[in-house]
Length: 223
Length: 225
Image 1 (cartoon, rainbow over the protein chains, first blue to last red):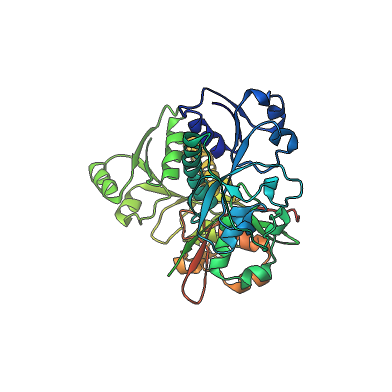
Image 2: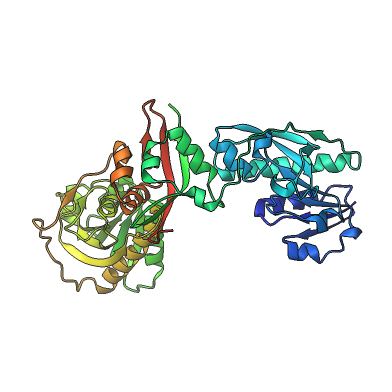
């Protein structure tokens, strides 16, 4: 198999370096952005694997090569961007990590305009700070992609159920809360909000005329 | 002159390593890391001229030692201000960003001995790790200057009436309350949280069930977004 890897986050780059050792892979190339990807003759490859990729691929890519990505949510409502943050804020502690095919559907509002199809899945814990969750994503990504390559090309697809509820992608400005809101929130809700916005995401912050205070890391001790 | 450093904390040992690595031809250096080692050393050296310098040393040095030898200590405040415990925390909470590191004579009354030197110390930084880096730099400057000048140093008695004494902070004082968020400005919150980052008991809020949320790391910008 000839594979193109596409990722820019450090954990994703390291995970894909492990996947590149899969025995079915005869040739691979690693792109870190769309400029590098657009220079590659896609038709010379069998599969494009993205990891931790936040942007669209667009029809010009999806029409020329089979492409897959990984999504970390079980419910359809978290298919619209920032799924880790939104699930943590909603109090979800166990979710799914799934492989989905990139299919360019201009009418889709889901992130990556993907459909509700997925092939391989595993459980993903949302406990701990973002760095702890990224550590798990590193491991589950390698596991899922190796399973996918083991099964390729006989890939079976499932569909997750559609929901009407939509949790919109978080914006950096959503990381601001007032001091009054901060004081009123429960310790558990604050913990979830702050840990979901750990680095590299825009940290939760409060501000007044003196400046802006960002909360990078917290610890919760349940009595 | 023989200089014996009393130090066991990592940052203090770093200070000792840097100071001792400088080439002072007429001085020798040793380091002791426990009170037991200090007592054994003193019993074998009663007839020797020694200057003891305590850096980040938490234990009281017995009067029979401070009366027999010149014993100096490094204190991270502009003495006589902030004599006593948790001087870094108290100064940061009070909004002080620039202070001094003082080298003073250890005597029975805590932090009250004559001043042998001072160096500038910044209290800026998002965490105590960063503040300790500043303390290290200030301590190195202070001790290097002392070693180069000794014994030609003009000492100065502390005017204890003009300074203040602060008590060592307790872990339960790390709790923040809703009114801290409602009525304090963000710089005051930032100072309270950053001065209680590791290795100190972190600032925390507690709910009615006793669950606690600890603030391990924050950062601040004076810009409003």
